[in-house]
Length: 589
Image 1 (cartoon, helix red, strand yellow):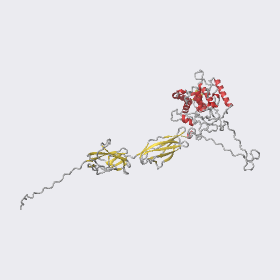
Image 2 (cartoon, rainbow, N blue to C red):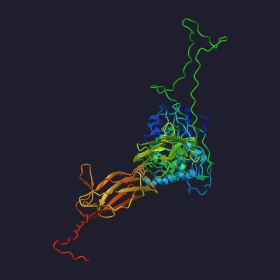
Image 3 (cartoon, one colour):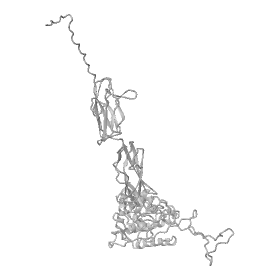
Image 4 (cartoon, rainbow, N blue to C red):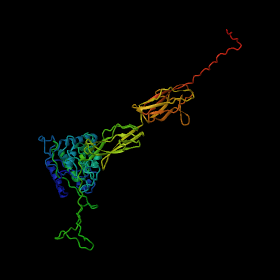
């Protein structure tokens, strides 16, 4: 489109001559006339077509009303295939369409016929627009995937002879972070592509520089508003929605009729490139609708009140300048190539972020930066930030770090160290300026865990009915054979070893009011992983009861508590005492 522009046509007599040449060309080839629908822009009145080339507004046009090629079809139009036995296998380069470009147009026609059959989109219309917008992707200069070998960019839409459209994509598509430019073989402006972009070749990206993606996007755009492109009025409206110019409509219509007569496939890269671009209308003065005249040179002025005028440099011996040095025009910024333009930020395979309090996360947050063409982009600064109240930080104690992407486009944050408070937090990755790209990852800190718990002694725990147990229950929790400090433990009196049924009889703890309590929560192991339970009391029920202790992490132990009455001890019988009346045996001498 804007590329290879060699000269500009002026509107007026030149435009009339071009239109006349178009009619003569079509008549000579016996092609059907490229008529305009009744009530459309056929009258030549710009306002009838919605044309406002001097207004500086896009009017919703897909291309932003940017320039286009005005070259017309050749005088000899090819016959429709099959209509002439003498039809050559190959014709002129003008009549041919590069293989990949033609395939993209026909694929778009088939796709739209499936999803929106009432539109009746003809591929020849896409071919006509593609010819006028970019010369069929610069003569079919695309790679094997249908992506242009170099970006096709229109001029900056800076209001200097074109519409004024300030940047809407951060330069992601057009490499210009100041103003928008039309992009790709179908010349979409970035804001329109953001709404209509398609992934027609199944590579996971919507690339305006890919002819398959761009052709399908153009097809769907032309079919908008329930248009039936088999109707002349709807076809005209569709073309004018692409670029609001009657000259544009006539040119597209000419190529549309030409391609309807027939065409043939030529190898990629061998097509001819049009040479005649349209001429943009400069912006008028507010309220006048006319082109502003040149600003007159300032008159000489005295250097001091009452002094003499400065010398006139146009006269011999005048000496100096009478007007201030003119400001140099502000140059239009050179667009950054898409290969160097930041396009997107994506997850580079980061798994679930979950860790136990006080421990290091196994996963590290990793992102990948891509350029506007979808390739990895190196040396992009990415800032990772931890947000939340769990106390989690990156290695080194920082909550925010910046890492640059490597050659593969990836940047990986340092290890995350979980805080002591269980809960959820987020890690945010931000990259890019102007329109930063952001990724947010959810993360969780779980309470400290234990994979084993055991008593610290083997004493039998026995109490009499109505009494308290003399020995306290003390346990130790471990995780991977190391003491598990700060682990939450729940103690429950149960009827079975699995703890399925709670027990409402037998041993119990006491709450703050001294009332029986058979489940305790909020217990935590100390720095050595040990926990000493509060006193346990027995009610009047005798028997063997079970106490189940469960830790965060699923470790558990069942402790037996025995309630039985103490054995009664029989009193000792007194020794027999001899009867005092009994006569003792005689003592032998």
